[in-house]
Length: 557
Image (cartoon, rainbow, N blue to C red; front, side, top):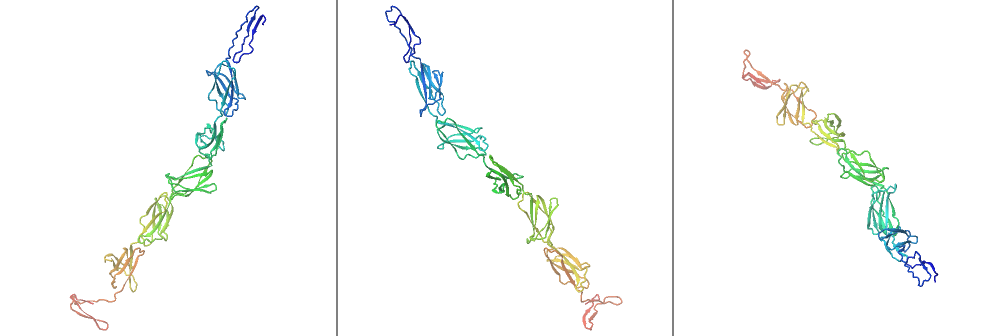
């Protein structure tokens, strides 16, 4: 019933999955048409499709806004890039027929990034939007950044080593701070941990308590841990005690460590290596006082000051030198050589090696004399005043004062008693005490041997010197005229240690009888007349004696 005329067929509604006819189909109704005009209209199936992505949390189903995807074709070419909206959706329209993959390029913080692309295909004639639900898991790992600083100055501390231990104390990892004091530990699984300091810096206290932290699921930021370390407030000192000259180590020297107030903190003694260590001294000023030196060494007169400072990284080393004593003492003991009795009053000079007198000493009642503070050097002990009855020491006694002498140098000096003596003989008249000159004596020893012969002088004296110890006899061998000869020898003894001459006074008596010698001669020729007989009569006429002359004419009574 179409009137004659020209028409066009316009497709107003197509079938799902088919492209709508874009151009009208023209046709004409002509006059006198006898048949129905047949129009064949072909429709192509749709060759594009759409995708709607819905991004949700795998566990909670919560929509995730802000996740960015790339739609890549089979050749990995990016076709488009979309981001999920607040409802977790992103729509991609007009995708040509073909295979595609949905690649997650930006995940949300706290979520694992989609590891594998989501593949899909746009097929010809698709009538509905392809819906893709993409689930994301929250991150089950986290990261920690440690920053290690000085507690006071907040200066970064490099080189501090930490262990990260899990809840069971198992070491998960070990890390060391860098020059900025930082270290990052990544990919820690969800759980509770503790940070244990295993190597701290010299001069700093080691962290005594672990730092606990927790990695929670879906952590979006690196967990920041600021760990402060205090500098050490204690320090140690090592003393080394040596000989100043030889640098030999000195064992057994005792020191006190005193604080600023002079309070004794501790007392130490050097070991066989000359060392003594004092640990854990609090920050502050101290002095080292030598309490007991070694024998032969000068004691330290001035304390050694030192200071323990905060954050000391090394043991403070103190080298202390001691000088050996450079003076010494001498004790002289003077005794009798035989009986060892002490001899008081003996005078000695101490002379140096040039013969200069350094000092002069006298032995006391114990026979001792002490010389103190003699400088190092060579000396000699010279006896200048001996005791009466004793021989003087002939040779000096040499000795030497050496550096570092620990004891007094002792000398026992023995003196011998004098072993000779002198005798002084005085010859006198028994009655008048007049001195008798020219009397001759022999001194004989105990065996009768003549050891000396002396004659008295005009003073009646005769001296016999240097007689050895022993017993003697004085024998008169020539008597003055008119005196009776000494009938018996005079015995005497020279004893050891005699200090004065032995005085012997010898008296002689005048003769108290007389002798007569008669010589009978011829008056004229003086010839001797023998056999002449004489009587000798005393004053009373009594015959005392009767004598006869010999051939020489002599007779004696």
